[in-house]
Amino acid sequence: MIFTLTTIFIATTIQEPPEQVPLETPSLQWMRKTTGDEVVAIDLVSRRYEAEGKPDIWLIGVAHVAEESFYEEVTELLDTMDIVLYESVRPSGSRPPSGKTEEERVASTQKSLEFVADVAKRCAEESDLIPESMDDVIADASLIDRRLSNFVEDASVDAWSRPFVLQVNPAKSEIIIWSFGSDGEVGGTGSASDLTARRIVKVLEEGEYFSDEEDNDKGMQEEFADVLGLEFQLDALPYEEPNWFCSDLTIDEVQTEIKKRGGDPAILGTITGESFTAKIASGFLKLIPMLDSFTKGGARETAKLLMIEILSMPESEEMLEGVEPELAHVIIVDRNTEVLKDIAATIEVVENVSTIGVLYGAGHMSDLSNRLGTLLGYTPIEDKWFTAMRVNPADSLLDEKYMRQMRAMLKMQLHNARKKKEDK
Image (cartoon, rainbow, N blue to C red; front, top):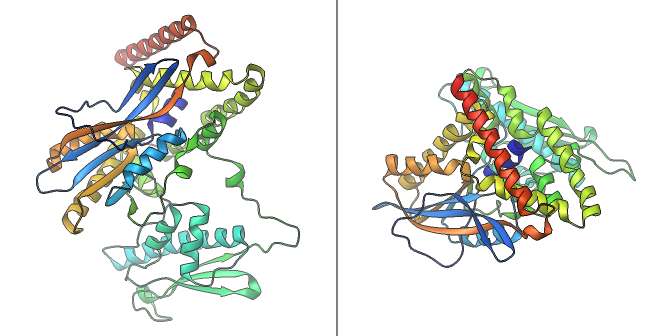
């Protein structure tokens, strides 16, 4: 359970308060525990970087689950950014189709057709309205997920720079997404052949309602937020803003990178919630509301307090060492490389940009910070701290004696894990 809770929280981003507090030498901490009168809290930092002749860059560490006030402060900071690059492993096929050869262009376009067709089908079934154009699909996608409209818009222009065409067959309740190949004309052979993706829309009978398993089986992070009375990042932040851009790998790119490093793509289940361990953890979370009813909120506050204590331990990052090295490298280094490419491209190509916000998980920030300095000449200038979660220890089920015992137990576990690793 320790591994699961730590992973959920570290994989997020944070934002800043309105007041500016210049620092001569900003701390390179990315997370800290603070204590006050009847409160223990976990804070995340947003850090501003400068480089001569280049736009300022803010590395904004977020949490996937946090208090509503945290996301309000984050949004306030992000509203001052000219461009926001955010973390989100993209669905396969959601990048703009491309390729160096005709074969690659055909394959890339077909993958995007399948992605767009899947979204069109889901939008039609959930809204009970068949889209009449690609503009309808793009607009309706935001009703499913705030990020999805941008993904569909990116993907719906083929590798020859021509927009996809939507066709509807009402008699069959069928949606067809078309690309007319390299020549842009109906028919043709080879790379000029027409490419399509077809989907049948489920027609609801009177009195029926559409039920999607994805809605009934919430992701573990969203469920975690609900149980603890917190907000979920994807619901709380304005991903639909026109100056927000996803800067991340796609699922199939992540799988490819893992294979390159000799790993098994099946280990992706450890971060998608599909693994057996994740299901067990999810089941445990469902017990908290029941315990809460007997303890008048004590179980919920105890869970928050435990997570704050675990995350604030100097050795907490070692709890993630159970992740396979191939996956760990892809999660942090390879995805950060994608962000750095986008930062460099933005600096070189986009005009009149004075601030770039990078909204990513706190676990990414040390590597990003180091490479911003080494590769692009950036220096940290200013820190802003936001409280992501707070609790009154008196409302939990643990007194200070038990907290000391818990800390000692965790340190012993870490010591044993470190020794085992050294022995190997």
